[in-house]
Image (tube, rainbow, N blue to C red):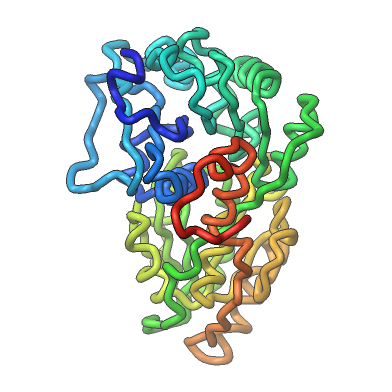
Length: 387
């Protein structure tokens, strides 16, 4: 169905997130694409706002996030389809679903931000890269090294090759994704690291009991499970909390077997600030070397916005974030570091970090939208903020 028959008035911007509207609503716009869509909606609400074009999902599997309202200034296009993924090769749905994207021929002048590089392989009339529109390709992770895309590596390479060729602008969230763009010939890539809206987070502590080490994020092969289990096992006197969905087999069973671990599963982003009040230390025990995906880590900014000291492994980019109170150590040294903290008392003093304005998602969104001429063409009335 043409865009003009689905979304009126004509939007200021099209957004193609990695997944789609259901995930944005059910999780709370917590990912980079979600944060940028949320702020783009606010900044362009008076000029048509943002139309979110979800990755097509099967009607038989589609679930609606009831009780959740879309971000202000945004609306979505229903991209459900009767086609079904092959249960023997579910990852290939990223490619097979492309013909279910809507036709956009009626809105050739509306610029787009794309986080799903496979969009470049969609039929021309359904691709945001078609019709002569200005398109920003904003890089989340390096999918060529991502565990989740191992089975369709050739298709990932083809999607990147085509999207880099056709994108008007390319932005990267970290050194790893910046290197990805350059590998495909885009030396004009602009680095726009991740950040956070610091005002959403409280520096108040409600932690009780033993020193509590917390992790918020997806739980899968990006974490070094062997080292995580070893560290926790060496510190039975400490509490560990993991909040996030499990992505890979074996992680849940291994963590459930540890008596000093509490699993909260997925937590909506609206509840994350209150959750961080119950932590003493923010933990980022990511795998180093093989399996790194090159993206900038959002949770580190959020831990620091809440005043939490951070303990992280030396994965790529962690030392480039410009944050204080972040201790970077190899995974085998984490247990001893945490033991020293606990020896000073169960509570660790929170040291608020004055995150610069440039670290805000509003600033990041303005930087991306200005490339497309959206804000310079349609400034918000009374808005005097500049990127």
